Length: 437
Image 1 (cartoon, rainbow, N blue to C red):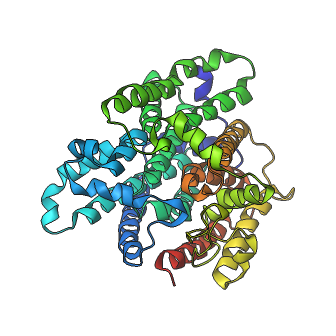
Image 2 (image 1 turned 60 degrees about the vertical axis):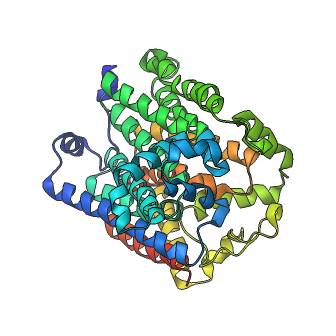
Image 3 (image 1 turned 90 degrees about the vertical axis):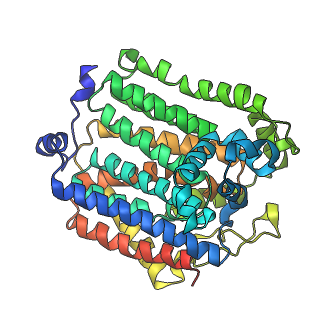
């Protein structure tokens, strides 16, 4: 496995930068990273008050009222008698156990902070951990200056920001996915048994929170195949690593489901039952696929409008989605700036004049991340094509890494300035949506 410790960085990720990244982080970088993570927590928790005040915590299909029950305390005992807690415990036990521990540890603070807002702080903290993980992932493949800027972009991307600001399991899934990707990017540089065990532990916890997190395994599978072809000696560890998914399934279906009383709704009887229930009610069309794709790839990062007053055909009486049209990005100066600058970042990296001359081993990780985004997307197109933003925060980091790697390696002038200029209107556009004005 020694080949995994001989990474070749692209363009600006030269040998000097590689040596620098393996040394102790400079104090200034640690301080800046701490400030970014701390600011993310404050941003998310503060936004939770705003969204709650304007009754905007159920956009995009979020079931925040289910998770609000976690603020009631004595969570584990109440699961058996509370339908909402029962449903959450069946499919997202990681979130339930996190909330139970959080509310127990911080229960003394309920003298000054309402239990619901104490619970919201947990989801905000989970989002902030995801920002730290994302920044670490970027630091593994691009120079540190770009890593912090891309970490900020990740932090203020719409899906991450919104779901870290409400009580929902989706930010837990997103942050665990970010942790998995970050750990793998470091493991692929220096393979160790300890690193793989840690990676497998994260995968197990992620699958316990959402079974579809098992799709994360496609990242090392494709990456190692792209680098070594059919020589699977380099990836033998994946066979054991991938068992985390089936183990999580056995725990949820065999242990957790077995200890819970029967649920009253057919979609909650099992993972398979839920899958069949949704598929039997779905309607598939080119319009639905188009709507799914633009939500998955674009709306997840940047809000196309200041409100979500569109009702999808499946739920005509529920207005909580964005109108499925990219044209809405050109209805305000801020969203225009976001669209134009994003295109500039992506297109400039691909132009022959500026693109990197070679991608080295980074090509493997780009294809691997693309496979993960595609596989997760294909599943949810089949499972629930109407609510892509509900499941898209888990691919936000992968999408941004696919942009960051060639951009940081390109010869585009003033790249850091361009990235900083892009982050500013992105923050404003998504902030306008959060505030609702």
